[in-house]
Length: 174
Image 1: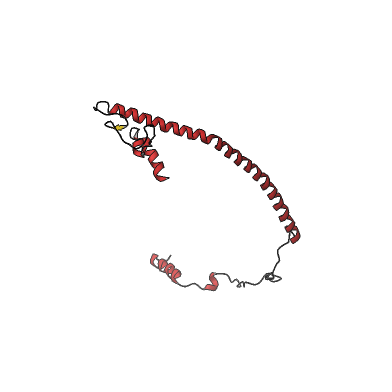
Image 2: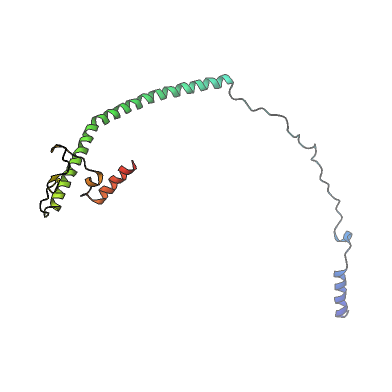
């Protein structure tokens, strides 16, 4: 039996010694990359025209048919739309005088509320008459039964601020 040092040195020499390549791997001949049997497929480079589904006359005929049907539907729809517009215009013409009358009635009601509020506020002031300036008419050249339209702020003087702001926004921005 060999001493331990000799055994270790033997294994170290065996590991560090380069191995012969021919003995380490069995010999396999190299494989070259070759074309498949029968050769490669041809490369298509010629122009391939698209398949024609319709002829020119067929496409023109289809265009004429679709256009004719579309115009027919448009004509029928346009007649209905025209009838509806006439009906709406007639309804607006009928209701317009009623809306104007309601607007005028509300205007006169607000004027009445303004006069009543003025009378309530100024009842303790001696010599104050509603609609005058201490008994003197404000508009001396106008007949007494003439309605003088008040200015915007005067009209809303005794109403709530929300109504005034809403109307002022409409008046100033339109």
